[in-house]
Length: 339
Image 1 (cartoon, rainbow, N blue to C red):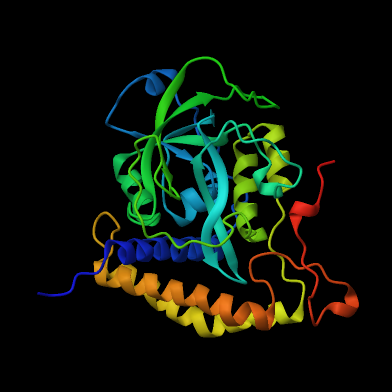
Image 2 (tube, rainbow, N blue to C red; image 1 turned 135 degrees about the vertical axis):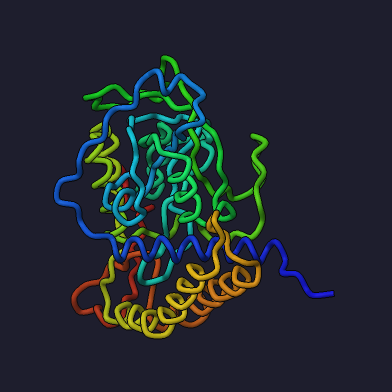
């Protein structure tokens, strides 16, 4: 009997595929000079259960027209700004050290979690997820699923969304009024009590909140938030998330090593995914297993060799001018108090 790849390794491969696709989108997305505003989704559509279009909640780089309409080729029909109190924004999807350390995700919100001044800046928003619900065709929604890991890296869930009125500057922690339901994609970390079936196989980092997203990736999110005129309070939060910045020569060497050694392999895998994926964007189990193995080796090599040799590839290192070669002092956002 032929050996079948384990579900665990296949799903790690799907996550690796998702991270590679996100990396490619971030690196190849071109700036849009003046995105054309979308029509506002009608109340009649929000209240209906139409199957002719799909309501999709975006919260990360898909907020940006550069990514959503440009790189992904999606043509949304309409859009509306929303507040989703049951979810919260995270940056806990592993990316590529020294280049794109992490990507955005969302998780079920713990409304009882206390606010601490020692939290990372990106974890200090406590009012639920703010995003945009796009009305898209079923075909475009399948494209979204395919470019986010073929349905294996992320879970497709349905959540309750509350419309944010136009011109709103602040966000009410407990929104009032009628809500509607929309699909969104999240990658749960563990089994959840909400009867959402989670799948093992995710590539974990020791501290899921430790890594910082690149300035390039964060700009896609902030540009998208500004394009849709999200509340000023939320824009202020997004603009205060600190990006990963290379500050030492050792880190620059580490980045060069990753580009020279790992990038050709990653690009080759990206090419294979485009050759072998099915209509839903899913890749064969054998390819998923290879991709999962490559990503595990990448992060193992970082933890065991690259980080000791070249310095931190997930968070900014603060150094004085005369320390630029050694990078001995770490910059932890947790030590920065809210002002």
